[in-house]
Picture 1 (cartoon, helix red, strand yellow):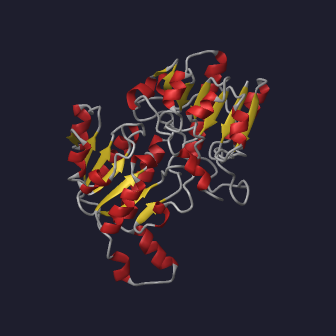
Picture 2 (cartoon, rainbow, N blue to C red):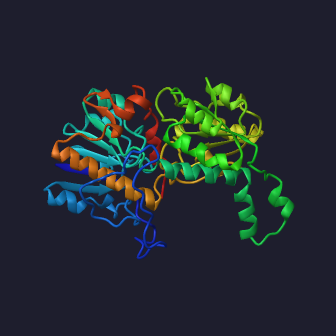
Picture 3 (cartoon, rainbow, N blue to C red):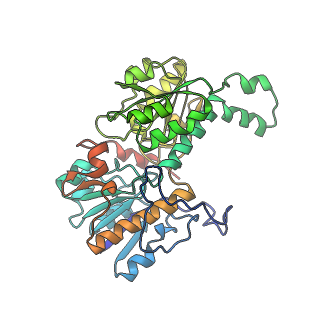
Length: 398
């Protein structure tokens, strides 16, 4: 079989010759008891770069020893790109949320041999799920592999935005020392009301991590949490997003992107938010109307916007979120720390082993199976597609 793997570029100065840490902590299971990816073996060193082209997710030896062909590229967006050329006769496509190969209906229909699309990470909205269902292409992802990594990123962004860390660091780095300049937008997070849109693995973990800061915690989700969790964290449940955003100083977005959540945060919803609130979005960029966010920052309706997700990805060089004031944006990095890479590389290997052995892939990993939403897909997604506009990724230049 032919496996096409679309990964992000190598470091500008080449692959690291050494790493800051000699090893990474060993984690045996996730908080809900789910075990970590458990392939029969791995051909990589955990803690090294695996998510870039040269890292190859540690798959080459495994696949070639079985007689399969592995093609790895980062060239994915322009007309005639390498990924499109290689897709035509590919059996399996592996892509990442951080450098997504947008599997649109057109691309899926150009690949008659395509059997499965694997997300090396979590979040499969870069695949036209409706087209995948129509053409019986299974879609799977490595559920939970980097959820806690993203939750850590959320906490980092909440604290850095509220305390105005970015401005203070810039003053110190430039040789300045005007304390008034440094603190005129700086607040304590203690006592603030913090709410999450969706309280799944990432959203709930982010709330848990914010509880020690003595904050008031809120959530909206179409699946209400058990009473025991609400009592443990003293959570306030809201029947609607509108109800929650009215009272929150910080809103963190953790829902999947699908037709029902596309541009959820538009001018209308943002106008209902508490004036001066902050948004942290590590879910998907397209959940927010990028121009509505910029207008709200400019008017002061929002005090700040942070996140690591854009639409499309990579974001065009002139994307308004790159230059607007009071932003704490990063490239899409929250779920691809070196620690997370080890888990999602192992998860991809586990999925491939199951596929080749004709054994069941974990139910939690399933998004589309046999033409229907399945597993986590049935829990989190709706039918349809959210890939429209992905062609704008061609506007990015390195």
